[in-house]
Image (cartoon, rainbow, N blue to C red):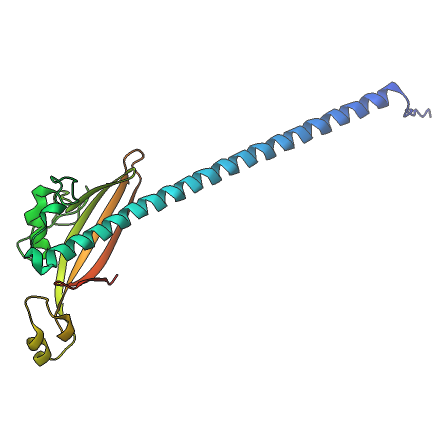
Length: 220
């Protein structure tokens, strides 16, 4: 039987080595390419997530600003010096424009004063909650790149703690007299901030208890 052996110094062996080396290099290049694409994808995703988080923070801040404005409007209307009316300086037809649409002044006064004839409304839509057919915001603001609409709704009244005698002794009018009881007026302030360029929006709602001439306290 004849045996053949291939010398490691022969041309065939060197060709095989070169082929294996080429395959190894190609595999390494492929792996590095995949890793590079993966790294770029992760970086791009991280940038998008960071941008989204930043946008959400900005929209939430704009909605929070509207909540604060809504509370100030309630306090102004409940201030006895304003006779339960929206001060003229808060209307949007003034200079500088205020946050309250002048066309919605009477409706807002009804809502803040707990008038049962007030029409149900919403800051934005559609869709709308049951019984609401149009968006009639009580507050309209522009905060940076955001258009903000707010709605103030009266919820209910609740007498503060205190005996009937104490309450009667300090009673000065509806919801007045926190030192001896008084009547808390509960309100919902609902605000939606929408980025005018991207359409991204953030909605924040809060519940406040207020006394005539004595300010408001956040409950929720």
